[in-house]
Length: 474
Image (cartoon, rainbow, N blue to C red; front, side):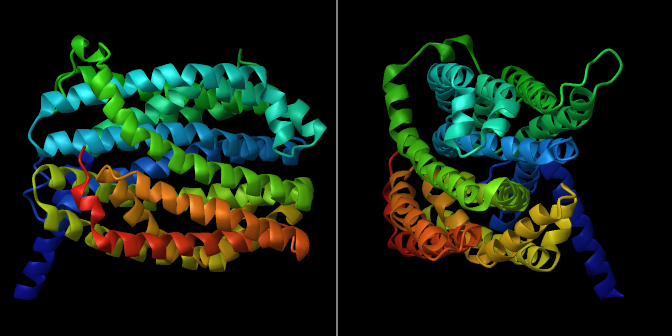
C-alpha cells in the first residue's frame, strides 16, 4: 500500500514538473536540484528543437509527392544544406546570447541581460542583409555549385530565392530563442516554434497544391509557407520580449548600439559562428560528393536520410542545450562544481535518448524513408544511410552535450578548434577517399560521418575534464 502511494506521489510530482516546464514559470535554476533544473529546461528545449526539424520534414513530405519529386526533394535538401551557413550564423549568435544572458541572470543582473540580448539582435540584422541579397541574386548558381543538374536548378531557383531572401527571419527565430533560453525561459522558445510549425503545416498544402483563390505554386509554395510560418513565430517572440512579463525587461535604449558590448559579444559569437560554418561547409561538401557520385537518386536518398536524422537529433540537441544554460547561470552564480555536475547529468539523459533513436533507425530506417517518397531506389539509399549513421548516435550525443557546455561557458574557441580538425582535416578527406578512390560512392560518405563524430566526442571529453572552460570570462 505504502509503495503504491509513493509511486502515485512520484507520478504526481513528475506531471506537476512537466506542467511547470511547459508553462514556463521562472525559477532560480542555480538553487533547485540539478535533475529538476534539467527537466524544466530540457522538455521545452527538446520540443522546440523537434519543431525546428519539422520545417524541413513537412516541406520534404509535400514536395515528395509532386510530379518529378526527385528534383523537388533534391532542391529542398540542397537548399537546406546551403541554409546551414545561415543556421551557423544564427546558432553562433544565439550561443553568444545564451552565454552572456545566462551569465548575467546567474549574477542576478536582469537589466544587463536584457541589454546584451538586444545588442546581439543589432549584430544579426546588420550581417544578414548581405546574405539575403547574395541569395536573391545567385539562387540558380547556388544549386549548380551544390551539384544539382541543370533541370533541377531551373526547377528550384525561385524556391532558393524565397528561402535565402527571408533568411533574416531564420536568424531572428534562432537568436531570440537563444536569448530566452539563456534567461531560463525555454517555454517561450518552444511555443514560438510550435506556432511557426503549425502555420507551416497548414499553409504548405495550400500554397503547394492550391486552395480556393490561392493558385498551386508547387515547390515554390513550400518556401512561401515556411517563410510565413517562421515570421509568425518571430512575431510571437517579439511580443514576449516587449510584454514586460518576463525576467527580461526590454527598453528602447537597449537598441542603441553599445560598441564595447558589441565587441565583447562578437568575441564570443565569431568563433561560435565559425564553429558551425566549419561543420556546415563539411556537410555541403558531403552533399556535393553524394550528388556527383550517386546522381539525383543518391542525392535525394541522402537528403531524405539527413532530414530524418535531424528530426531525431535536434531534440537531443535541445536536451544538450540545457547544459549550456545551466553552465552559464551556475558559473555566473559562482557554483562551478554544480555547473560540471549539470553537464554529466544531462549527458546521461541524452545517451539514453540517442540509444533509442539508434535502435529505431537500425530496425525501421527504410520504413521512415518510405513515408516521404515512393521511389524505391531513393528509399533503399536512405535506409542504408540511416543504418550507417545511427551506429555513432550514442557517442554523438555525448559530444553534443560537451560542446554545448563549452559554448554555455562562453568558451567557443575550444569547440571551433575541435571542428577544424574533425571536419576539415579528417571527415572531408576520409569521405573523398572512400567515395572516389575506393569507389564506395555515397556509402563512403555515410561511413565518414560517424567516424568524425566519434573523434569529436572523445576530444571534447578530454578537454572538458581539463577544466579550462571554468575560467572563461564573459
